[in-house]
Length: 366
Image (tube, rainbow, N blue to C red; front, top):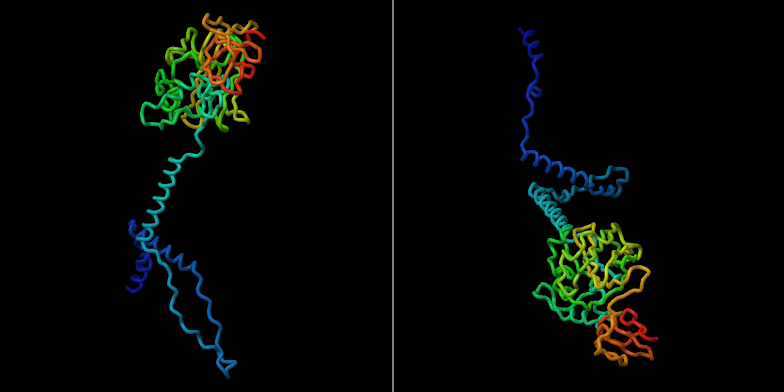
């Protein structure tokens, strides 16, 4: 009997190994984690150094008495509440940092405009000593915003005529008649339909180099569009006024000096026209816009003709050139015994004498 009992008990598993540990719930796991962190903190804190043994007088060879016991040093022991609070703080920090990255993206907004042919915004910009010479610039500067979206401070420098988050939806976002201002109230004056905007003379069917200036190194797509044949400068500019195919298109960053220089082959045109520029930022959905007024002459190899070559009216009298006069196309003046004919309406200013301003005056008799 005893043998059978021993043999039977020997093959039965012990009570310790006969049952698997029950699965632990999230509460117990959190408690265990708290304990482990607390133990790790306790191990990481080195114990205070033991004091040197004290030898009493006359007992040089006696064992030193044990040092007095010191109370255990207070240690921070994180509780479950502490851990939960720390986790919540970390989560909030991640959300805040992510929000800041969205609100303040890296980089700055691009700025730029067409300088050749000179855009309306660039020519009429404040600080340009010749902007007051042009009647159209003065008229544009007097136009104030139609609403309170932008301060009534007049024109800007023309390099910030842009729209954010537009992508390639230019026709949808910018309404007809507001192309030159890109819908910006501050630049509403640039949308005036006039035939006295300052122009850049181009040759019909000629080759030119258009220049676009940026405020820094930006990666974008630059396109130049020309108005259709039969364009009327006194009619409001619409999207339908422009050719659908651009004169030229380039993709990439501006040059080392922050300028795009784009070779352009011009079609056959005559008289006043307009070059419309769109620059799209490849790093965002923003875009910049510019209107440049141009005057086409004869085909390459022929004599350039423009409004300055038309005969003046009978009422036009030749008089001495003076400062502060609003000259119109066809007006004739004499300066230093040379006769000049006005090619662009403007107000005369000191430093822009006829011999110094060939864009405004043509020599009639040397």
